[in-house]
Image (tube, rainbow, N blue to C red; front, side, top):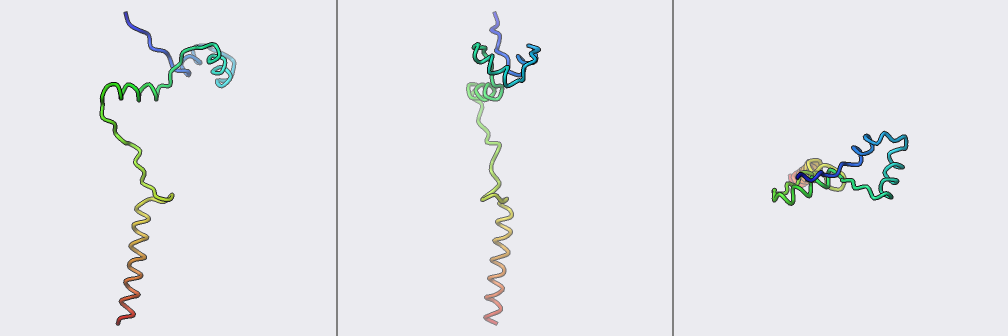
Length: 91
């Protein structure tokens, strides 16, 4: 016999046909004790239980709010300006 998985809050809200706003409806359902799932959390738990390797998808490419490539390019410009100034003074 298959065990029926609980539905997400959105699915239950659409099926209910309620005239309440979603926020009011979900507060009422939580007070009643209705079992609802968060699909993102359920997927994460399933991946962990399945033993699949975790892949870090959102690797930060910013540093202090700027793209790392901007910092590298800026550093190269500054280093080049300093090197040019030193070269001109020694000439």
